[in-house]
Amino acid sequence: MAPPTSPPAAGFSPYQKFVVGLLAFLQFAVILDFMIMAPLGALIMPALQISPKQFGLVVSAYAFSAGVSGFVTAGFADRFDRKKILMFFYTGFLVGTLWCGLAPTFELLLAARVFTGLFGGVIGSVVLAIATDLFDVSLRGRVMGLIQTAFAASQVLGLPMGLYLSNRWDWHAPFVVLAVLGVAGLAVISAKLKPVDGHLGKPQEHSPFMHLFHTITEPSHLLAFLTVTLLATGGFMLMPFSSAFLVHNLGIELAHLPTIYFFTGICTMVFGPMIGKAADKFGKFEVFLFGSALSILMVVVYTHLGTTPLAVVVLVNVVMFVGIFSRMIPFQALASQVPEPTRRGAFNAISASIQQVSGGVASLVAGHIVTLGADGRIEHFPEVGYVVVGTTLAAVGLVWNIQRQLQARAAA
Image (tube, rainbow, N blue to C red; front, top):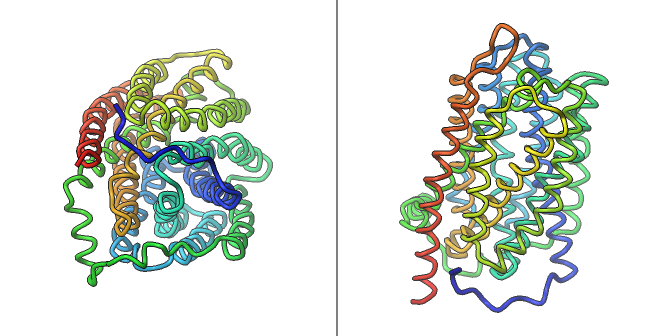
């Protein structure tokens, strides 16, 4: 049984529709900047003559710096207009993305990913805080579902285009194009987004450090943070080596990778909003439980595949991502109810930091589990899948406890 919520709202106002679209665009840009590293791995590793461990370090560098940035800014996250915070970090993110597009060596690319993470890692938490501030609990499943379609859109539009640009020129091109397009998004934020400062009218702690300390040590927050850790660990372990696994283990030609990402993205764009509506209608935990079960099944299937026809790979990817989305969307909607309004910024910043750091650790661990065979095949990928299954099962138990706490708080 889902925790009691406010009566269902009539729907989105025109301005709320604009905000959802803007937040989805920002998520698209940030997610694409990170995700594009995975399919480009098959190009970057030989181009820079680096090993899987070094590539795992490049992927995790963004995550670690984003984690540090989130913790540093958490104490101040609720003390300013969220629009101003968003513009500041988005500007830095675009500078870092352009730097990635100009980096000629492994060392400079690593430094660029660190810089980009310092700014990009905070954007997602600001997006979630704005969504929570502006939308009622009864609509948050739909909001999270729509925002998370950015994940699918990055596959449908971004990843195939990124691979095309890389094949047409080189792997630098997608980052340069993303930075240039991002400037248009920055202009829209400046001109059209209204101030998001309703939380400033409520009593706040005077010390940013005590604000951070109390946010971290709140028991209900700790439960959510631990859940984020487990969920991030699973996702980040599979992603960095997916393109190499598809090419060298499943026998998919490099030219066909955009086809897989395209059809997977199209289907998840369709299912994302539907999952959000289902979470609002049937209960966040119930949908999360369904997504966890489906994810476990498909991760085991995916990591044990051998040479496989393209159509079957597409089908497996689609179902696996439906499972992942069915965990991600309801959990975000459920977790948005955990912090008080005056702690939303700090809570989301810390949560994003934990997610990034956990993902960075997971990428490094996966880089040490998998090895490259003499024929280029990714070895020991099933073991990575088993770790993902274990973290998913543990996360189910934690989310059940979060659900119970929200029910008790609502009843009190």
